[in-house]
Length: 162
Image (cartoon, rainbow, N blue to C red; front, side):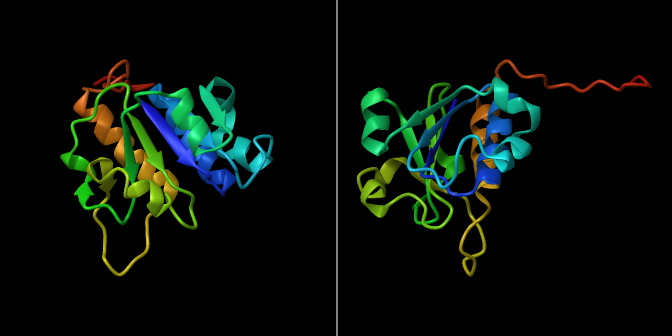
């Protein structure tokens, strides 16, 4: 799977998303401009010691992302979407794109992809969920549909036995 962050602004969100990507074997794609430096301590703190293991690619802009990923199947997460994220049959190489915290994905991009734009249902009187929570919700649904490939699905106790 692939997570794409379009112009993320908050380093702690990107750090949390990076950690989620590492533990799920997911690649992270960051589209500039970023609202922070990749060297920021908040980014590393949120990602803990996982950041060094992250498969991350940075793009100069949206067009650079498209040029370097020809034929990519992208789903665009937006509160403006008409389709619910659970209505999609996700495939292992799909890209899940999320917009910047203050504005989301630009509508100019969304209108070009009406059938690939998905939303998380929520209270209509509220603006949006936290970005890192939204990423986790969609990513884990996609991974669930694929039976959590390569992931440990059973836990082990440290001191006692099941």
